[in-house]
Length: 144
Image (cartoon, rainbow, N blue to C red):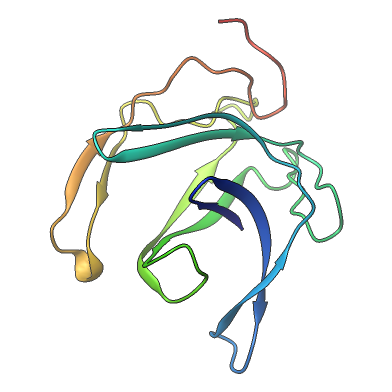
């Protein structure tokens, strides 16, 4: 899990307490993220980060372009910086390769999305606009 809270950006391995669906804060993992940019515009925070495909420890997720090219994601926002019940959450998928299976930057240029309150109300629409990639999913660097 990648956590963006206040001035911090870090990875955390979620724990399970009690029943299967109850999540505890878990354990903060050794640092492996590099924040490339962190900005706020129009009330929306955008954090661009990178990290190696191979996880730093066994508790970190290791990406494999041969096996795991599409990832299931859960996104959430809390009521505060403390770990707790979600204010809002959603699920999505993220694909790390193009249609031919070649590594590509992680962006869906022109894709339309929605940010909504709980229950799918008060939605705000957005269209993704990708910045020029710094590197693709395989780690190849691109000049600006």
